Image: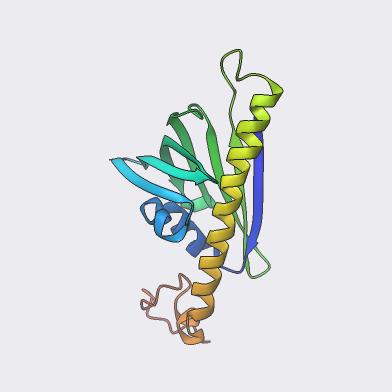
Length: 174
């Protein structure tokens, strides 16, 4: 099973990266997420139990998150749940004054019943693509509202849009 969801956001890549990396905040930002519990912090990542809802259907899985800020990637490997073994990669690319975000899901379905085309379509299209699509929609909505609410002077002085002084002491003006 292979799926890809894609969206463009009028949000700087650094801020999108922060929002995606801060998985413990997802239930606040994403109404379809029921909870995210960080179970363990590891060198280079963390283990988290994540639970969302696809319509009336609750879903839950545990994954290992790994951050690669140097190239705008965040990767997850599912270690429990029906999607155990799934690899997920978020790719963040600066584009047109914002960020192109692509989420790629890859899962080799195991077991005789799950290897069918129908099972792949149900898991991939009805659940994985649907949940990822809602995730992107809500992250875009939150990130763009936040960016619009940030005063222009703050944006100039702080590329991360967090309202903190530029560590180099620059005002962002030339």
